[in-house]
Image (tube, rainbow, N blue to C red; front, top):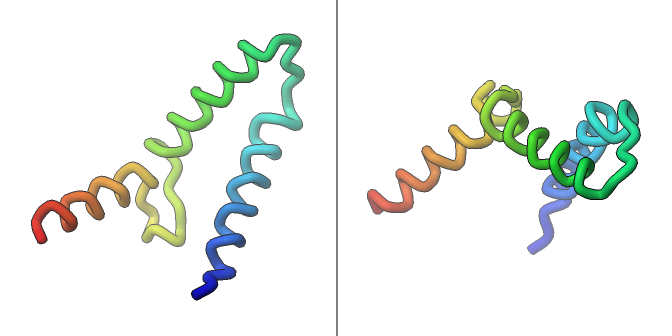
Length: 72
């Protein structure tokens, strides 16, 4: 079964990554890019509140899902 809305979520994330990081800075070394991506990932997963998750951070949603899985 196909889920085209999943593509939309992924495409929106890539757009956000480009707008918030990649188009704003120049990275002279791959190591600097990797460090910036790791920092962005941490901020996105723990601090960003997303409407599609009822204004919860992705890490909060993942933790709640895992709690349900272990309880079942």
